[in-house]
Length: 270
Length: 275
Picture 1 (cartoon, rainbow over the protein chains, first blue to last red):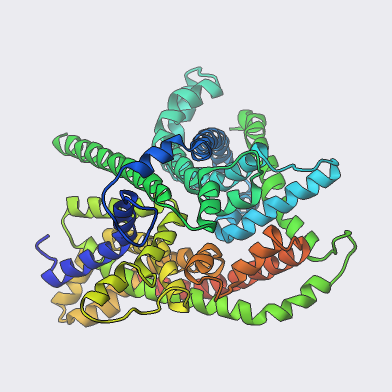
Picture 2 (cartoon, rainbow over the protein chains, first blue to last red; picture 1 turned 180 degrees about the vertical axis):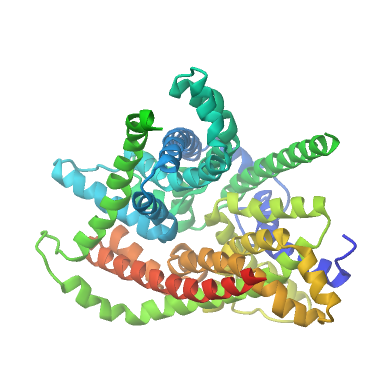
């Protein structure tokens, strides 16, 4: 702390004000007594009540969580296996081409990823003579696809750091390769898997653009629902929703922060 | 290792199949749709039409570039100061920078309407001192502000990561050898932080160029960027073929921009590694 000057502190504070101004505004207006998002006329909790009694919003919230959990589980399992496979690849050329393909969804603008998926689904739907192909299945495929690179890129470094001889030793001592993997490799790469899974989960929760092009009318996620709500004049209930999300994320962050501080201390005392 | 080759093939198969189906095939679809008409006959019409959108492409690239530069100007000192702060302050601040990224970017963008509107919070504050009301919404500046606001964390985080890892003894050595603060910044700190700057630029530029929600809300339909045009082809005009052609061009243009960026940052990076 000693090295930062007062001017630097003021500068950082200003950046935080900029980042958090919209959050402050939406929190205040979520308690608005009237329907306006411009004029504040008295404190009220009515928008929170309306939010919880709004079926469409609650359904969208449920869909979002289901999608995030399912897609994160699928992408974590597949991505971890893929990382193991890529790491073990002997052929340099094959390895780089697989990694290049893996990077495509991360390099592409989300809108291009979204429409390319949509085109594929529409095309496949036309081939199979089915209308309305878009739905839970397509949005799930899209989410798993954009999460996979994050899982792979967070597991791969752990695999590279690992000493392969431990795995070989386990096999020499009579372990079946699969068992050796579960007993030796898996615990070592677990932090990478966990980090990737959390990343995948949060990416899915918040994704709008790719979902927008791959979702169907039967399965709306929260960002899609919010999008259709913000097409009209927004009422403070959307602000109430965001305030709640904000509060939940904030609590989660503080808990993570405390946990990390504790583990840091433990490591220091060792 | 030879024993496990079959096992490895089994391990690799699902992902290879998945990426062929859902990464490569969609890209092929974009190309296929870009070069066919609505009946599926091959045509160059869509690509020929791109010329009509040349000015939109240029506008998008300049908006993206301006937003990226502003992000860099704001983020660089912030990351620099943050990296010099106490450890617990650093950890808390990084989380606070990340927190907005986890919230619906739609509502965060929308709430700028409450701040910038004719009867919004800012104009009310200006009104108190007898100024305004100013017309701030539905302008190019509001769109740029929306981009800077949304993507600033993507600039701060990679630069901060590089700065936090930077070997402080290099800075001290430069100062011991008589380098002034500014000189040290220019010759030591900035060259060493180039990788962070490069990934920050990528992470801000790509979504800014291709955005459509920010322009719709904060530009109020006054400003049309390429993302809006593409979105309209898929969600209202239903001209998938033209939309695919536009996406293809957007993709290629972004790849060229990133290629240029990599070209410059890579050579600089080598200079930094020599130390």
